[in-house]
Image (cartoon, rainbow, N blue to C red; front, side, top):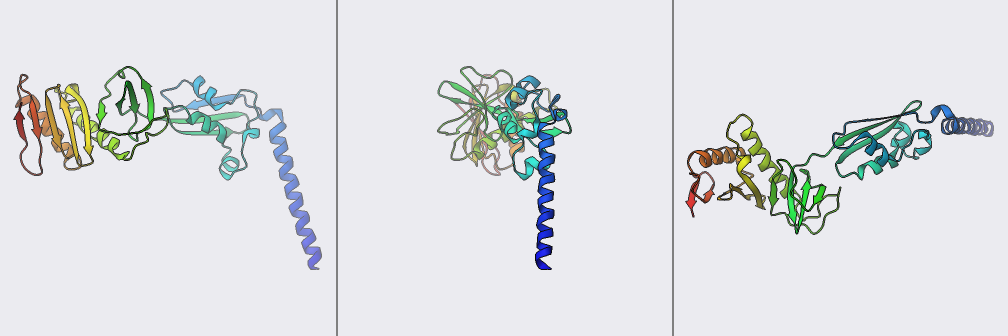
Amino acid sequence: MKKKKRSKARFKILLALLALAFVLLFLMFAPIFNIKYIEVIGSEKYTDEEIIAASGIRIGDNGFRKLKITPESLFEFRILDSEEGIKRLSYVNTCKVSIVFPDKVLIKITDRKPAAYLVYFDNFITVDEQGFVLEAAHSKPVGDLKEIRGIDFSRYVLGGQLETSNITLIRVGVDIINAINRSDENSDIKLADVLDWVDIINENDAMLSLDNRVIVRFDPKDKLQYYIDFTKEIFFKKISTQESGRLEFSGDQNPSFIPD
């Protein structure tokens, strides 16, 4: 009896495997499943044509042949090789390439946002808030991006994260720039318009230059928004356009301006 039960169980498993193989062969070779439509959503940086070219997918391909034998690929109908190809584009943050039954591919993208730039020898390196390199050029980036200094890194690769001993310093610099932008949101006077650069000494010590004549030093981890708002008030209302010097914040003491 036990042998008969085992034989029946094995026969059922064999039938299931044969049925699965038949379904897979049908999906992979039936013309009805050849790709007729490719939709791209989410990217503001790249055109649909650029995304599709990076995916390696072409109209007429069979999407099911591109699936890998992994749970996320088989159960979600995701084309993982195409996702990896698209992720090589430097501005792409996340990417999902899925087959929409029976003949469509949907590509969902989220972009990385440029946050600042760094100067590396004669190159201007545009990075996002996590330190991923979005662009590298021999000229300063156009627009309102600000320079972050004090980030020591050994090398960079377009689309990769900077190789630095402390990547969190970039986040500190971006937090300072964001605090300045928040201060300017509902104000007629703009601190960002006179910001030359932000220099990160360490996580608790930073400097910024205003109008190439006033250096502000403060602890970016302690009351950051207060320091920025106070700096704005002092710079535009207490320091004349002819003065230069240093504005120092130290603990709970009132800031002190030291003229040159």
